[in-house]
Image (tube, rainbow, N blue to C red; front, side, top):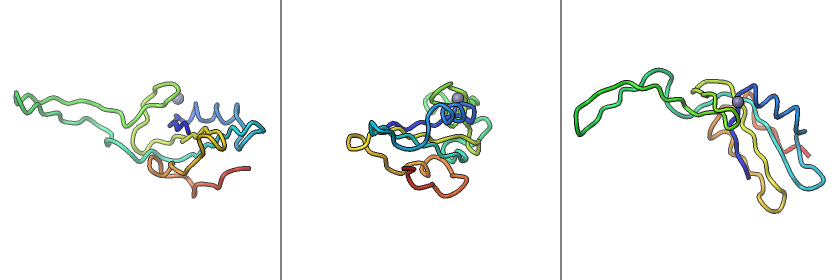
Length: 110
Ligand SMILES: [Zn+2]
């Protein structure tokens, strides 16, 4: 199964291009909208080099959109998209590891 985190814009575009569910070829797609829950909090991180004692601040994005590379920070709205092939690379629930869904993850559309 292919798992993507998409920014809202890319997720909406993907939803409009690919109908939810499994097609006659057994290829499935599912989009779940929610809020990113993984990664670094927004704001700079203090990076300490243990060898030299050098300190610097760095902004690290939580994650980037798998389509357009825009930063998806913790708390940002985003889509978790799954693409799979029935019987070969089956779907399994993974979304809640990465995002807090707006509602409970819907069952597989059929
Ligand atoms: Zn995007």
